[in-house]
Length: 73
Image (tube, rainbow, N blue to C red; front, side, top):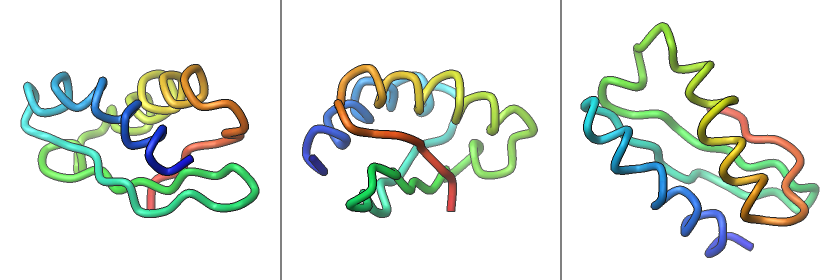
């Protein structure tokens, strides 16, 4: 499952990098929670929560069955 999540993250990375940020996969728990760390410009951006829920979480949930939530750590 971790490989599938990483593959999904690779689809959103170009957009994040274009704005000076990135996302790092920290953990995929057995109960379907993906933990990520926003880095670079994304780490301190006031819109990062919207990026997390409307972008990263939506893409991961759409591509990886069984994922319940994506959280920033």
